[in-house]
Amino acid sequence: MGHKRNPDAVASDEPYLQIGEVAERTGVTQRTLRFYEEKGLLKPPSRMEGGFRLYSEADIQRVEQIKRLQQLLGFALAEIKEMVEAEEVLMQLRAQYRPEAAVSQKKAQLLRAIEVTEHQYDLIRQKVNALTEMQSKMEERLATYRGWLDQLDGRLRTERRAGVKAKV
Image 1 (cartoon, rainbow, N blue to C red):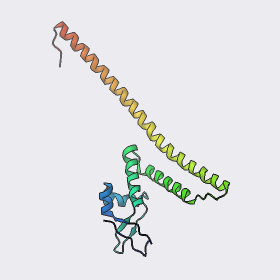
Image 2 (image 1 turned 135 degrees about the horizontal axis):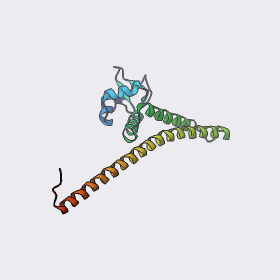
Image 3 (image 1 turned 90 degrees about the vertical axis):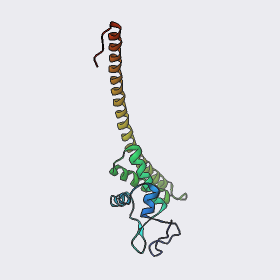
Image 4 (image 1 turned 30 degrees about the horizontal axis):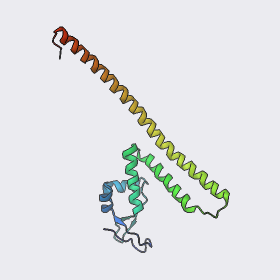
């Protein structure tokens, strides 16, 4: 069930959810949400008069992003924080963009957006490279094991043809 924030805290009609509702909706624990807040992955939520945390839809999307980065790419929390902070910078750049601004200002914003996005790309590329290396090692290991299995199967066939009982 959505709640409204304390009107003194934020003037908005956007519905907000309490921590338990966010935990249920995102599949993380309330403790995890508090931990994300402590580590700076989530902005401190506003609170109801009774002190209950209230989260916005943007907060929920952030939690989902954190989960994806952890599960899909195996990012550590420090890396996730870098990605999240980069997204915030990009959002700020988009909010500051004005079509009527001077060309030099637009260029500076685009250069900053490129810099931030390249940083995110580098973080992801490092993970992909590490995963690709792991995958190659697993493929080599599987090939080795399958080669050994083929050798054993060959010995078994030879021993059966020779009438010798295979050692088990």
